[in-house]
Length: 490
Image (cartoon, rainbow, N blue to C red):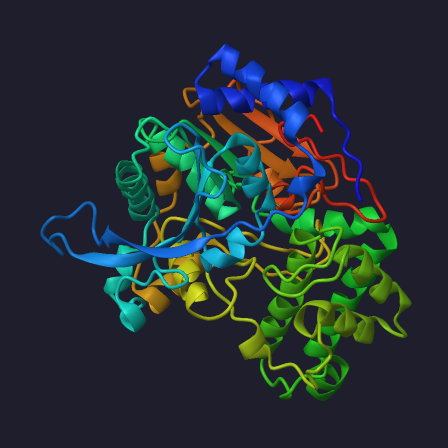
């Protein structure tokens, strides 16, 4: 079990978080402090929230009365009132992101355990076009029906759902705090900015609101992925970089059979396109391990061992040669069961408008479309500031891909225009949390901007680790992670 280091600064952040919930009622903050001291007991260790899966009749198009009139679709959400002090307890609302909502509900123990202490109603809402919330069923990704997949429509979905459910549950006076991780964290920020009349405050965990708005250095992401491996051991970075350089040499020599043999590929590569696909396939594995570098094994976004970066580096450095070591290392991601006898490059990894990966299946179609419209991710690797092969992804390349794939032309800068970019000074009541092992962290807010725009940096924390933590179990086998999660007094 891990030890939690409670700090005075963190305690101040806790009181700040309570301000988000209770809108500055000092007497309430004091009673909450006493409640934490008295009620956070081992009985909360094994909380198993009794989520009920429901569907909400949601408006198809919130902004065009002519296109679909008042047409609706069934939007899935999960809800539990087992902790709720009906009528006056807060509402914790998770702004669902790019995937099945059950995945996020089952990997966000922090929210439900906090709900048990605060007497909160908990709702996890699924994002339109993901999971089972498909507005047009199997035709949802046909053009032009996919056009209703926008950040603005998703936020309006959440605003309408919150408003209607509060009426239905007679909870009009209950403050709403939105939570989200990664893209979901971005949506939590946007909800507080766009609908401050509905949302009292937001926790945005690992929310890259800057980099996805086209702000910052396009080399930063893969440089930060590299830094995670280099931090474990500099020789690890050198080994990975050397393996990619060796692969590049064989590709230039068109020694395709040797490449197939070295990487156990199902088919022999035969073109520069195949080599490009292989490079993306390999690079994606390191991205996943850096993001999910948790101190315990997980099945979130795939199966991963505890401390995957450490496992990867040990595999790279203990291999008989660089090429086979690289193959075995990416197998941590692609072949965790050991059952694959060969790798099918084009089925295990799909190149898309997000160079960090879109995943597979219908959810990947949705994210690819969003990366072609509002979400900007023109990230590149260069084998100089990072350990990966040179792979550019410019605005021009993005435009060509998106025009061919979806018939759309991206609008660079739109997300910044719509949701303020780095000009957040007039926003309020948002907590930005980031782990220093997360390659997305430097694409988000790392410094506190005002007394109500608070940044929390989590030492040795990976991608939205804090949402996975609970009061009594904040990560940690073999290594203590200093979790500063609103300064809970345990």
